[in-house]
Structures are given as C-alpha cells and as structure tokens.
Amino acid sequence: MNLGTIGTNWITDLFIDAAKQTKGLNLTSVYSRTEQSAKKFAGKHGIDDYFTDLDVMAQSELIDCVYIASPNSLHYEQALLFLKNKKHVICEKPIFSNTRELDIAHRVAEENDVFLFESTRNLHLPNFKRLKESVEKVGKVRNVFLHRIKYSSRYDDVLKGEVPNIFSPEYSGGALVDLGVYPISIAVSLFGYPEDLDYSPVLLNTGVDGGGTLVLNYKDFTCTIIFSKISTSFNDSEINGEKATISIDDIGSLTNLKLTNIHSKQTIPIGIEQSENDMVYEVENFVRIIESKNKDEYINLKKVSRDVLTITETARQQNDIVYSCEK
Picture (spheres, one colour):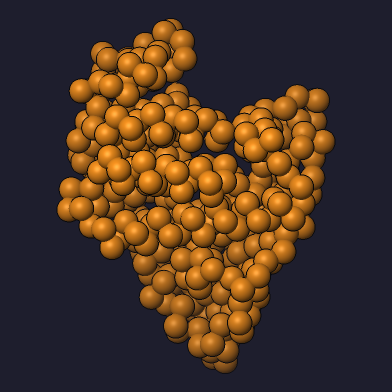
C-alpha cells in the first residue's frame, strides 16, 4: 500500500524506517505546513512528492494509507478528512482527545470501508505476547505496579515560562495522555476495564498534568500506574502474584522481561530479542489486518483504544483538566 505521512518529527522518521523494513507500506508522499519543510523531509526520505495542503493530499491517488503524527488536538480533524476520502488511517497515540471523537471517527471509517488504528506500539511487540502468556504463571494476581516516568526536555521550556504543545491544553497535552497511555494500554489489555479508578495528578500552571498516580481497581487487586514527564525512574514495573512476580524493565519497549518465583527466588528471562526499531511490529500487524480484513483482531484493537481513552477522559474529568477542543 502507498503511504503518506503527516508530521516531520522523530517519530515519523521511525515509522517510515519501520515501513521500509517491513515492505508492507511504500512511502509516496509527506505533508508539512510549509513547502520548505515538506520538500526537505521528502528529500530526506528519498521521494519527490510532498504536500502543504491536506485537502489535496487526502484526495491524492498516490496514497492508500496515512500515518498521522501531528499535535494531539489535530488528530481528529485530520483523521476524519482522510477517512472520508477512503484512506486507511494510522494515528499516533493518543489517538484523539476524547471518546466522542473516537466514536465518530470509527463510524466514518466503517461507512467508508477503511481501517482506523491507534499507534500504541507496545501492544504489538513480540514481548507483549510473551507477557500475556506469562501472567498466568504468577498465580492469582494480587498487585500490579506499572510506570512510565521519563523527564521531558520540553519541561525545560515550561520552567522558562513557555507552553510547548505537549504541555498545552490547546493541543490536548499532558503526561496522562502521553506517557500514561503505555501502562494503561498494558493494564486494560491484560486485565480488562477496571471496576473504578482514581487519578491524582501533579498539575502544572500550563493547565495540564506533568505527572500523576492513577489507581485502577479490579476485583482482587489494585493496579497502580505512575507516569511523569517532569522526573525519571530507573525501577522496573511489576506484576505480583501468589506464586511469582513478573518484572518489566520498560513498559514502552518491553525489552527485558523476567519471572521470579517468590518461594525459590529463582529468576528466568521470559522475553526475546526484538528489532531495534520496534515499530516494525505494529506496521506488520496493521498491514496484515487491512489486507486480510481481519475484523476480530481489529475489533479488539478498537476496544483497547476506547478503554484507554475512556480512562484518560474520566481521569481528566475528575481533576477538571479540560482541553480547548472541549470548551
């Protein structure tokens, strides 16, 4: 399939590289708001076609699928435009600002017989499959601690009095919907939607959260999720059971998974080596689902996206974190 991209940042570079490695998507065109930026990015990736007008791009016969990596608040309108023009859409996480946008976009995708995916890469990793298969080995789950705590260089700008996109309510930013999506997606994929939840954020003067603690309550255990863009952690995430504990070094990349028997203290690795650019796995899965029209797998991914977005929306509402698009 022919691929177009929106966004000229590092994550778009990684996605394009992953597409080239998998050979399932052929990059044909890119978009940027300025001709200079668009032309430069196209040249960087060895193609001639670029756009500075999204309406023209959406109607182009050069594109079958688009990858959207623009600021969060722009995802919805851009996705709708391409879906209405019968293009498949892969949207960088967080997919949209709220569930209303998600439900409308999925309806439009269905009406136009195309697919809409959220690019939550950790759910497509080989080691996520290993993790899912290993959870039963811990016995009855009694406690889960997941985190994504990584200092953002953009926070330096906040300290200078600026408001970068990722910390702006105008662009639907904040730590919850950025780093928080990684552990939340793991939690709902492994354990389902919680019975209830409570979010305690660290609010910034920009109007969004710089970090926080999200508690997901399940029938027999509590899942505590901590995320931050204003500090860094060097500890593992853990799933604690009555027989064993699973340790996860990085909830985003799942590069190192270990299972420790709590009685014998024996530790064994349960993960495998993964590609350096781990976006290749989601690209492979998206292409396979589109080409095979695998509705069951697609429905499951849709449910996870909606569960995650429902959680982040509920958590924001608990703390009066309101995006500009919602006012």
